[in-house]
Image (cartoon, rainbow, N blue to C red; front, side, top):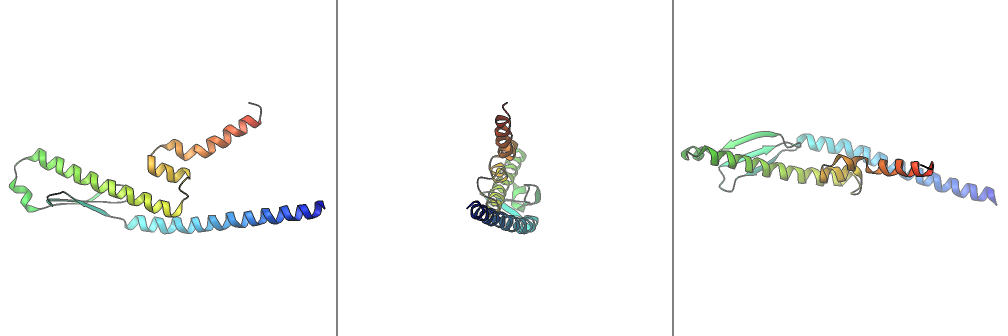
Length: 142
């Protein structure tokens, strides 16, 4: 009877192992694809009046800034600065949303990496490991 139970347990473990390996392979190939998609990402935002266009890359870095020639007919440099900053901020926000959406296609929503992409908190990257270490400490009688 115990031999049958051992075989059943081994079969269940093997099935679980195969599932984990399959998930890893899918994730690994997805990460290569995601990296390629990120390398091509460029997001553009335009000011409401259409005079400023800012394009940023996947990390929010400014890669292009276009100013309509009509912008020079206005003499307010402070207003122009604010308009440029707001437009760049909009492009960065759009990029962040797109990167989060892309990451969501490859990582489980509850993973530390996916949560980090949403909240920028480094603690979320280690939250699972923190729980494991706390539980291990409890098991040791600490």
